[in-house]
Every structure is written in structure tokens, then in C-alpha cells.
Image 1 (tube, rainbow, N blue to C red):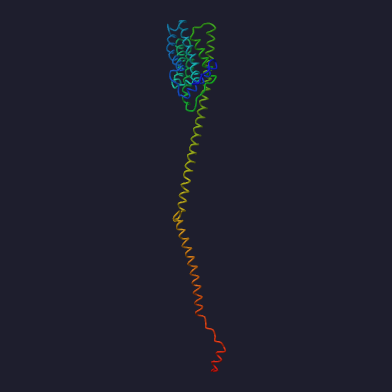
Image 2 (tube, rainbow, N blue to C red):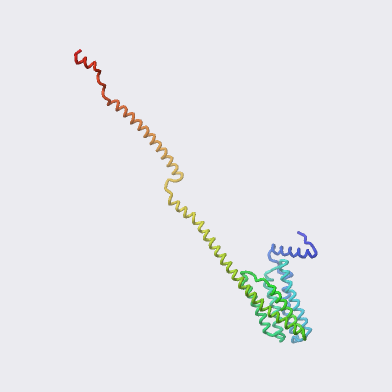
Length: 306
């Protein structure tokens, strides 16, 4: 087993080893530090609400306890996602539970403060509508890709947390005015980042649909070319079969050889026959040739009666 160095460098090395183990071994187990932090935040939601509305919600001490619960929940929100990514602790439970826990603690605080009359309902409505809408938007485009968290989104989350935390405490004087301005900035960032997320989602979906159409066209073209390359030999074979005549192959070779021998025999016979005819002609010429004329001296002697 490989040794992991200790100290500051050892923490980074351990993170890399953990991430690599998570990639190699598949998904991490359910009971890991990141998921435990997420579960803690979920459990804090009802406890935070009870502390916030205890004794009518007007007791500064109980509101301080509620603020402590809210602060712990927001701090765990900062760390669980980072730990999951760095150490390879990403799980299906974490993917679902983490955003639910984020929206649950923030929604509970906004609704509780509005119910107590400390925060206008329109502020709660704008923030909750944006958070719910962006969550649904992420699911709408999730098959095309993931919309990354922007700097504006992170700044919005931080501003919301600070503003809501200040509203949870019982503040008066200048601090009460400051928290109102911080909440106004949080609302502006909430709306602006929401519009930007909608723009990113539309661009991502268009790019995803274009990529799918391109891949489908390439698949059809490849399929058509594959069918053409498979069909061409079949046509050539059929054409070749139409041009094939009987007597090809080994039988044709044997027939050709026999024909060649027969032809050679006929040529030899023709040559022999030609020779015999020539010879017979010579004999016939010899038989039909006229007899030579008698010598003149013998004819004169016969006539003279010698």
C-alpha cells in the first residue's frame, strides 16, 4: 500500500488518493463526511424553525440560538460539496439531498421571518421563486449538461446568508438599516443571476440538441455507407453470375484439355490424310501415264520386213 505524506502536502496528497480511489472503486459509500454534513443540515431545519418561533419569536436569546443553528447549516453548505469533490465522495444521495438541504434551510428562514412580520412577503416570494425555478431549470437541461455555479451565484448565496442571518437576530438602530440594504443587494443578485442561469440553460439546450442532431445525421450517413459497401459485392456477384457460361472452372479446364488433344489428333490425322492422298495421287499418276513411243529404228525394220 502506498504511503501518503503527512503535513500540508499530505492533505493534498490524501485528497488526490481519495479522489482516485473514488473514481476507481466506483461511487463512495453513503456514510461519508460530506453526506453526514448534508444530513446535519437537514436535521437542523426543523430545529431552527422551533428556535426561531419560540415564545412568539420575540425573545432575543432564542433568536440567537436560531441564528447559531442557521449559521451552522450555512457553514456545512460551504464544506460538504467541496469535500465530496476533493475526496471522491460524490454519491447519488448527496446529489439529491444537498440542493434540497440548501433550499430547505433558506426557505424555512425566509418563510419564518415573513410569518413573524420581520421580512416582507414579496422578498420571500422573489427569492423562493428564483431558487425553485433554477432547480427545475437544471433538471430540464441535465441531459445536455450541467450549468456550473458562477461567481455571481456564489456571491448571491453569501449575500443571502448574511442578510437572512442578520434578520434572524433581533437588531435595532444602524444594524437594522444595514441588514435591509444587504437584503436589497441579495434580491438584486438573486434576480440577475436567475436571468443569467436561464440564458445559460437556453444556450446549453440548443447546443445539446444541435449535437444530438449532428450525431444522428452522422449515424445515418455511416449506416448508409455501410449498407452500400455491403451491397456492392452482392451486385457484382450477381452480375458476374449472369456473365458466367457453363464449362468454367475445373470441368472447363478438363474439357479444354480434351478439346485441345482432340484438335491435335484431328490436325495430325489431317496431316496424315494429306500425306496419303498425295502418295495415292503419285501412284495413280504412275498407272495412267502413256507408254513411251517405240524407237524409230525398230519401226523401219518391221515395215521393211526385215
